[in-house]
Image (cartoon, rainbow, N blue to C red; front, side, top):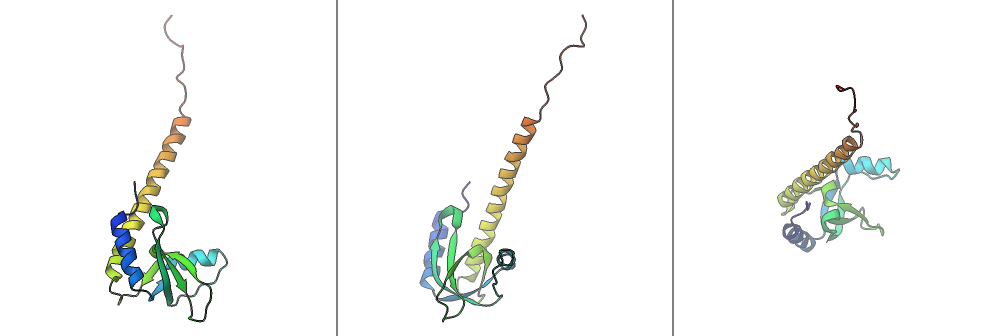
Length: 134
């Protein structure tokens, strides 16, 4: 199963790229992940300096800059970002995020179901013979 509709993702990526720079905020899960890694990330506006499509595995990725004086950029999947609601593509980005998140969840569930199926197959007991009439 593919995660992204390639044509839709590329179209959105190109239109986002044309609207650079724009503001985003990290989502709650991204803040938790960064904190778990021991990296500090503030819940504030970040400027998107570059956008690229990382294929079905990576999706649309944004390169973020905290302050205009910061020299270092860092990448984040657009699914972990909250786009400025005033941005003209905000609704399309939200739709892409919902679809991608849902498909990743379903893909993970199928993987989990397949693993459980393998575990059940490995645990099957052989039928006992004997005990019949004879």
